[in-house]
Image (cartoon, rainbow, N blue to C red; front, side, top):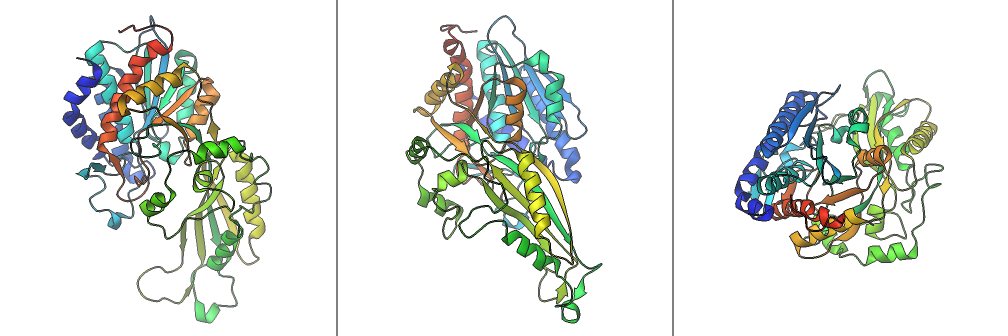
Length: 461
């Protein structure tokens, strides 16, 4: 039996184990779930051990890192596989059609928090490794699977773990599945990620909330002040107004725009999928260009005053906004963070105090898809999906990818199996069950393609 046949034979079991993983509410951002995050790490560690890897649960000052290794120094390269087992908070709970941590299959979809980001995509690697080891007896070289529990809060401790094993690991390639395909049936290799700056803006006015009739017009309202500050961040053409923000943003070359326009992207279907009345953004750019290769600024959350049922005539004492900016090569997140803080402080009116707290950030990343690693991935995806992959970019951020590039300087393969509209970070997150199984088959095929791609012929191990 070969690995693909094994995966198909055990498909139902793998799907049930995927559900077990999803039932653990490993929300890294909420301290109340710290025990659940640890439980998810222990579940994953036990599962990797059953698959045939040597396993370590590495403690950090935050949530643990799970490391599974297969050591074969006699043959083949060193491959580092990365994923994360933590998930986003599930709120707002009343917008879920089923409980977020009770995985539900409907219409070919697995619905649960973490289904696609990233438990489903991480676990299909576990299934692929088990299939190869069960049928071939070994992996083609040394494989190190690193799964962290802090990706959704900016990976604050993973770099120190990587540095501790820098000399010992030294991977020849890093493989990550935490991205999406451009459309159903179109396997995709991601060759660019936007960077991230995430800030919390706190505006303080009077000592406590005030009666808006008695004090309105005489006291600066923090909510009004914050609204004006936020409105000044982006102009009427959709361009970010922070001084110097675009200094290092590269213009798109004509051939880059042509390559993006040739991708199988349906703008109207995209609009319908997200349920927006219309699409918008920076003038002069297409939707794909705005999402992938242009920077953006968004308010992620607002809080101020009375928001309960009915009326309460209150002048709030404070207001808060959470902001994210997505960055493109060659922007540096620390530079943009400093510019944004300075600009927001300059916008603050007299009568309020403003505090700006950086929460996390990361630099953008891009790669040219050339060489044997990309060819092995392309052939593996073609075996699983029946067509050659397309090369895409991703509007989101995976800050640790830039860290991998900086530490190891090796090729990084972003081979994801999500789909547009899968509600990652939103209610009713889902992953295509078919993509989960095909993704596992593609990863198993990748292990089989590696020897040929590296000039080792048709060696089987």
